[in-house]
Length: 164
Image (cartoon, rainbow, N blue to C red):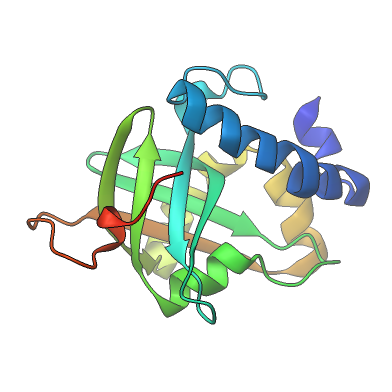
């Protein structure tokens, strides 16, 4: 039901302007144990990107898939909006902080290749079927692989920035 609503322009607006900010706050407060969209607790993460213009941290709840130790995230333009800011930020600054539950780690993002798109797209549609109708309208999708950064924390790292 919610994914059908999410495929409409009013649904996209509601998710973007109401659900997402509440989801972000709820996720932070509960460590991801209580979310607004039932049954998705194990499929939503918080991604913190560095603003491409402002340099400020921006945190957004995003659906994800797990592929061994890699995470797969997606944004599909619904055809009536500009590209989502977190996608533009991620392209400009691929080093990100990801929170899954209470676990927070640093990742490096890259856009998927053609073969990876074929592998991940059907799984992403199972996760959020509204992606398909958005893609049919716009032809625009951004799918990223997040790979864990296995290096010690350093001053100025996105990991050291405030998490609230």
